[in-house]
Length: 634
View 1 (cartoon, rainbow, N blue to C red):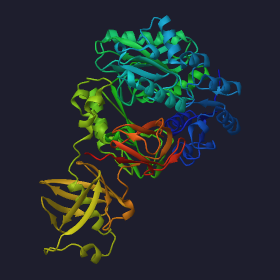
View 2 (view 1 turned 180 degrees about the vertical axis):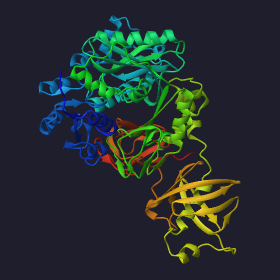
View 3 (view 1 turned 90 degrees about the vertical axis):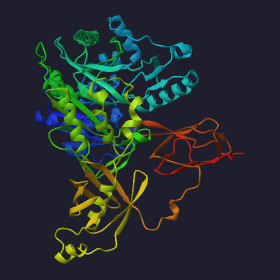
View 4 (view 1 turned 90 degrees about the horizontal axis):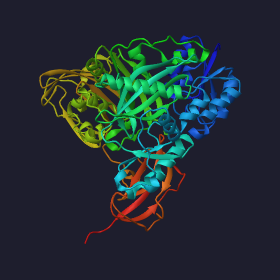
């Protein structure tokens, strides 16, 4: 038996905060590590002690196992929990932790090593009788093998994954996937397998002790994905025949026993439309979506990880599951703009009570360019799937999220979509429905009026003359304000007493009550610098005050390509120099931000007249990258 006293979490953000929560409940002291951008992050503020990892990029900080071990020893920690991502599935790091006399909270290094390479893991699973998709050698792939899925051999989270539907694009996709995998995991190995259209991503949570007991803790469905990264997860996976559930449980246990597994892990499967399961990979760590399993089984998986590490034996069988749980990942990103990640200050993150919220942010925190843009995981649990889904949609719809564009509206619409409600789930959901889910924004007019009234309203504690001065019963000239939202300018004209089709009932700087089409509506308003945020049952809107006189410097040369986010230029198209001819949609350069690569495409056919960046250069949002002069038409 091992008796732990102090725990260092070799990670950041919400998973570090979540592990600290359990560690404190078990009486352990907590130690955080942080990069320079994370010096004031929530996980640092939440820990009993914190150690700086000098630098900003993951390769210099959270991927430096030697620095993390030094930090643990210096802070007096006796155990290291890796969380997920970064070094969580690095067998070498696990061995170094143990060699330093520290306790590793995770499976044995040999088990990590056996499953670390997806290619080697598949060979092991084939020997154990677990069903597999046959690999495809990219060097000999033919049209008959299409479509192909390229995957990073080390790590997950959608990094290093590409779908290839055209052999002419295979080499470029291999290069891009390998570069992204090397950046994320330090290993550029990539393999190919058949891409199954409209398949389901179903996984089994397992937990094993050192005494031979292996639990299969039900199934999870994680089919709703963007860029091969999960967005909505639920447990149990709905609509599976009982025989298939049994098959998946038995295969997951066989996988764990094949590598003498200990601790928490997940075995992932692809289930075809006709119900055939195939092994994808085994994640030898805690999963992002573990809260839905915790809710259904009423367990704390982090506590069980710690207890199993200390030598505690699990009961022969796990507890019985009850109800249904659903989790949504709230990201700072714009789904309508190719899932473009957002950076900046998160002014408000407020989600109604009654749901579980795991987050690494609080009001006023900064979302930077170096890490994943996930803001929070929101989880509901209810007796039935329909109730859990409805509660999650309501909680997200009622959240107040100010400062950054998020995927909140997409999540709400996804949860309320007829296919999702009917549990018709597959990984092509967003390929089919993204345009519908991101289009048709609600009419901003009532919210814009509320913003204008809130701006004009004096504070409640202002002198009586000030509070009455702007309001009169006599008709007067209308007041006018101009705002910009979602790229469109709106001009609001209103009289102090009324507005066409809308009656003003009350107005303060933070709450405006209107009667819209005969229905009383409350609009919550938050004013921050040049932005005004308005939340109501009609939707959420962000308005930017439009200055009376535009700044001439806002104009840019026609054909200018501006950086859509801060990031690093990781690649420039081969042979691209000023004077090069380009065609519409041609990738010109690749920008890496938040661990994902983003292509900068030629806006039109013509000539590249300027190239202002080089490989390895860091750029700010809005920086001029290049200029394309459109060819003249005869």
